[in-house]
Image 1 (cartoon, rainbow, N blue to C red):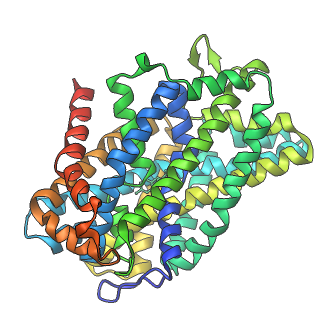
Image 2: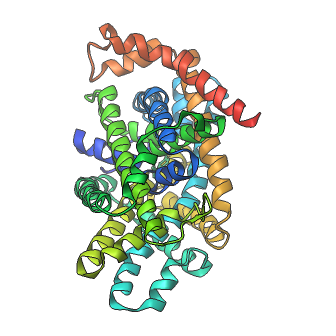
Image 3: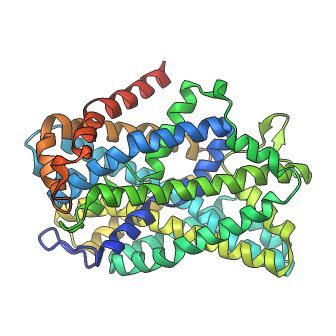
Length: 448
Ligand code: PFF
């Protein structure tokens, strides 16, 4: 894709290219780090069920909404609301999305840096360079965190300044099947180890008494984060989408790919935790997890090390490299939101905008690299709270400002029979009632 100025907007090379890019945005640390960590700390199978409900009942309708707003307006999130109505409030919703993008990216790049560091750690560990390996696993080391986060941000900026789609499309096309392949191999390995079945039960047999308002709130935030919703990333990606595409269909593909990978990651990591415990690795203190933020980064290397030898190191290196690429296709979409905003609204040239915004984000990343305890509060404010609020307002925008007739007219491109379909009857009910009510209820009960 050659995205240029707002007058000469680029587009995706192909339908597959778009699906891959959107799936690349969705699949990332949220699936492999965020989701299993939350399952482990917040309710096991009960969490999984609520997460799936949030994804399909709230996330999917909002994804269709974002893509149609983006394609109809061909603008960044702020310009999109301005282009589709004269309402003065909604461009601020777009601006909130831009802010969430910047803030999420600032901590995301630190965690992505860890993933990349672990790929190198696996090699050092294999070679017996334990001191170097230990340095890379020390998530509390500010200088190391900062260096890796800066490398990650520079890679993201570099890709955003150049031809985006060729890079993203190619990377994603090979990454996804490989990532799935490795996760499946590891699941098969883990399931044959002592203690695994206890983890499988924890992951798949729900104890409904664990469902609390906190759990539902967290699962909803996770669904938005994982699907890249609520901050206009998919408004932006939709703005490059061709009128030939069937939006509900591509949204369904992206949702299924995202949920599928999260589900597999859970099936790997939850049993692996129990395997680690029966091997004497301390991940629990009493009934509580010893740590949550870097849980996945303790469990997985331990697993690769017990597999050991050349097979262990190869699996470890490839896995963490793939995770880094998955994170990179997500950071690209996170940075694309504020960059497209600056290009469209402040008439700045693409590479200048990418460097300006990118270096600003890098500055915040460095602070977080030294102060990793900030990750929890940032993710609460800008992700768990910020994204669903954005999603809620996007639903209200279509329902009451832009109007569903206009949205359906847009969706008719690529889906000519939509107005006679069941989708046209059901989707508006979700936008008018179900999504806003569920999101508002969750947020309010979380506060109470
Ligand atoms: N969906 C990404 C993940 O699961 O890692 C994170 C993300 C990307 C969130 C883009 C929001 C976004 F706009």
